[in-house]
Length: 131
Image (cartoon, rainbow, N blue to C red; front, side, top):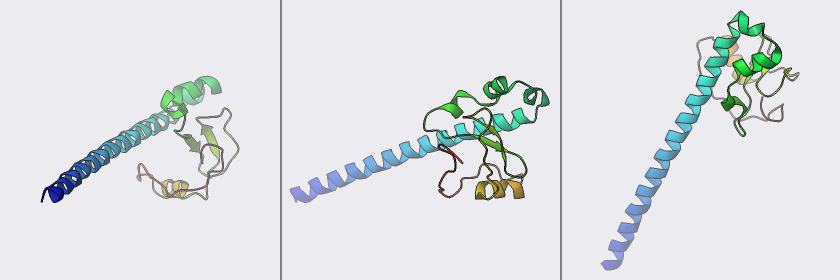
């Protein structure tokens, strides 16, 4: 009897630990996605402002891309034209020459302006840190 009580006690402790870890991961992922989304919307608002687009490339880079988008392990925030050609790149001025028109994340936003945040399937990047 004593042994089975120990097993149940340990089982419940591990179950609580797993639930706590799951909650921590959920909140961390949710917060990171929120920060990504806020950074993306800041860039979207910025590229709609012709005054910002007329700034020198170095100043425009500082205005459009906050510190989060340049942090290690965050990836790159990219802006393309209607054909999928890179026009702004949070990691490079000028933007690196690449076309993303065949990527599902490009097609989804090309086909519907109201999609919002879209998380694609995993893919092999064409750039060393994104894309």
